[in-house]
Amino acid sequence: MDTTFLLNSIWVMVAAVLVILMMGGFILLETGSTRMKNAGHIAGKTILTFALSSLVFWAVGYGLIFGEGNAFVGLADFFYSGYDIEGLGLSGAVFFLFQLAFAGISLTIAFGGFAERAKLSSYLFFSVPFSVLVYPIIAHWIWGGGWLAEHGKQDFAGSTVVHLTGAMAALAATILLKPRIGKYNKDGSANDLAGHNQVFTALSVLLLWVGWFGFNAGSTLAVDGAFFGFVAVNTNLAAAAGTIAALIISSVVTGKADVPMMLNGALAGLVAITASCAFVNVWAAVVIGFVAGIFVFYSIRFFEKRRIDDPIFALSVHGTAGVWGTLSTGFFATPELASVGKPGLFYGGGFEQLGVQALGVFTSGLYAFIVSFVLLAVMKIVMNGLRVTEEEEIIGLDVSEHGSYGYPELLRTEQNHASLQKSI
Image (tube, rainbow, N blue to C red; front, top):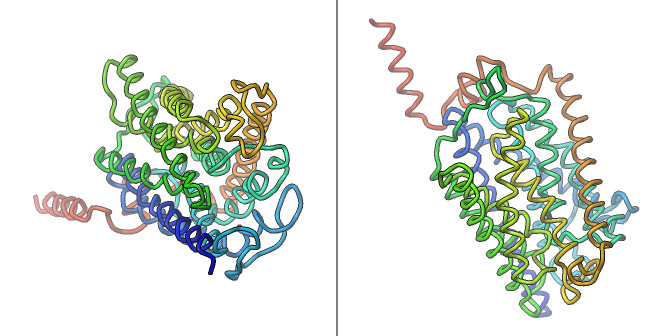
């Protein structure tokens, strides 16, 4: 067997495992950012929906993205059977698993807009159409040789394909589900329904940060020239810059060094650099991450003032930062690194590449939002609502949907308290 083929396969397999392990980061992020009474539900549904999206990706998702078809959708290679792909330079099965992991991440991002108020059945029934009609279509346009690829759209590892797509589905969900009980007062002011564990959220960001080396550097799909090291450096520095920027802006504006905002800044930097990590110089990666950290701070405040309840901040971290990251290559892509498309505005490329990037953001974001909104609106009618009852939401989804707490000791404490009250 060719040594390069083997090494490429091993590298991308490691990267695929890192991306799948990011699910653990998302479990901690979502549970830590929400309230204790919903922790077990959120953790469990993440595993369940990743399992479901994996089966759907095997059956049709992969073929819709990479199968031979037209400029809008792939129409072959369904029910992938493990064959190798000519000219790919690595195991076809490894490439399939790597792409499957990306599809699962995008779905997980979408479910940020469901948190703390959606029925478990809403997650289950949305997983399938999202994994068929939303994510694969946009991925085909950009990564599968579709019409945006023909225009030279730059999105190396998925600021648009993965993150913006998931965020637009989350926006559709949070609009239809409406805010959580107690989030907003009658005068429109917001209450802070703080997450129950900042240690979880901090650990989640570290896990996601490490996993992102698989996400971005793994997208090189090759060990030749060790270019993955350059991509990893850009990824790390953008995350670092986003962390510092969010901490600075929160301190300046609010007078406090906001820890959750700092963590969101790190994630925003990672999301933003995902599109451009292979196309820009190191100094530009720092700028891209820093700007993303500032954008995420103002974006979170923007959505909150408009009564859009986004518990995991998916719209800002993955949506706003995804838009900025995609557009950034239109400014910073260098002639030497622009293996796709053309150089950016600051390198003599004019506005052409920036225009292509903007077109990709607009069409992909609009498509993801409209299709997700329609799917969820139909589900809302057919399922007699996407949301649990008011009583179930107050009790918490752990008990109302699953019959047990993610923290069983809490349940025992409440039961003992209830028994005591009855005996008095």
